Image (cartoon, rainbow, N blue to C red; front, side, top):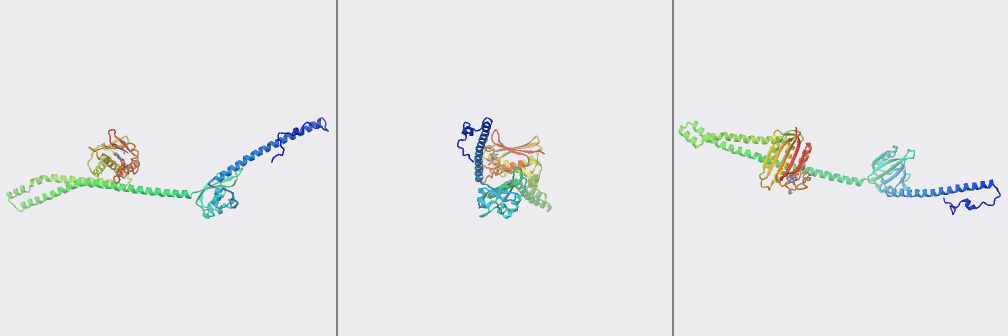
Length: 451
Ligand SMILES: Nc1ncnc2c1ncn2[C@@H]1O[C@H](COP(=O)(O)OP(=O)(O)OP(=O)(O)O)[C@@H](O)[C@H]1O
Ligand SMILES: [Mg+2]
C-alpha cells in the first residue's frame, strides 16, 4: 500500500496555497479552512501509519526468514501436528527422512508414518496432555526406503494463546549410531572387566603358588629332622633289641657288659630324651603350620572376626620370605595383644604382598633388612613394613596402587599386589599408604580398626 503522492511533506494547504477567491465570506471560509486542516492531519496520520506498517512488515519478513533458515538448518526432524495427529508442518530434515515433500506429508496422519510396532505409543503421545508435558520415546519411521533407524522422539504439547491444547510438536534424532557405539563400548568394557578378573585370578593363583612354596619350605625343616630322628631311633631300637635279646637269653654278666659297651647303650639311653623331644618339637611345628593354614583357609571369604595381629603378621612374613631365594633379615617390633577386626585370610594376604615387595626391593643391598611393626594408635592398629631398599622414585607413589602398575620385568610382577591390598584395606574401612623413610627405603603403613 503505497501513496501515489510524490511529495509526502506537502500538505493540502500548501497545495491549495493562499485561499482561493471564495464565494463564501467570513465564518464560512474559516470553517472550510478548518475542514481542510483536519483532512490534512488525517492524511499525515495515514502516511505515518503506512510507513510504520511497511517497517513492521519488513521486520516480520526478516523474522520469518530467520525462523525458516533456523528450521531448515536444524538437523533434527521437526513435525508439527494438530490435536488429532494430522501433520501441519515438517522441516527439511523430516522430509529427507520420510522421503516425501512437504505437500505430500501435510494433512497426513503421523501415526501412519510410524512403524506399526510403535504406532500405539506415538498415538498415545499425540493424545491429550497438559501443555507442559514433554514425552520421550524411541520409534522407527516408515520411509520411502523402508523402516528407518531408531529415532529418539520428544513431544511437547502445542497450545494456543488461551493455553488450550491445539496439537503436538515433535522433534527427533537418530540414535541407532549412538546405540551401536554404546553397545560396542559396553562390550569392550565387559571384555576389559573379564580380562581384569582373569588377571586378578591369575595373580591369586600366583600368590597361592608363593604361599604353597612358603608352606612347603616351612614344613620341610621340621619334617626333615623328624625324619632324621626317626631313622636314629630305628637304629637305636635295633641296638636295644640286640642288647635285650642277650639279657633274655641268659648271657653272663661279662658278655652283657661287653655288649653294653659295644652297642653304646648308655649313650643311646642318654640320647633318647633329646631325640624324642626334638621329634615332638618338630611334630608341633608341623602342627602349628597346619593350624595356621587351616585358619587361613577356613574363614569364609568376607567373614569378619577378631584377628591376632602378631601371629598373622609373623606367619605371613615368614611365608613370604621363605618363598623367595636369598637371605633377608626380618625384625619384628610388635606391641602385645594387638588385634584387628577383619578377615584373617585377607589381612594375611596384605602382609604377604607388602613383605613380598619389600624383599624384591632389598635384593642387591649388602645387608637386606625388613622391619615390621604393629602398634595401637587410638582406635586403630597401625602395621608398618619398612625396608632398606632404594625406596619409591619421585612420582611413583601416586602410581603404585593402580592396577597393573609394575616396574618389575615381565613374568616377575603383575602390578596387582598393591592394588588388591589397597582394595582390601579400603573394604575393611582402613587405609594403606606408601612413603619413603628419611634414612632411605620404603615404608608401607596399613591402618585398620581395632576391636
Ligand atoms: N617396598 C618397595 N620399594 C620400592 N618399590 C616398591 C615397593 N613396593 C612396591 N614398589 C613398587 O610398586 C610397584 C607395584 O607393586 P605391586 O605389588 O602392586 O606389583 P608388583 O610387585 O610389581 O607385582 P605383583 O605384586 O603383582 O607380583 C612395584 O612394581 C614397585 O615398583
Ligand atoms: Mg608386589
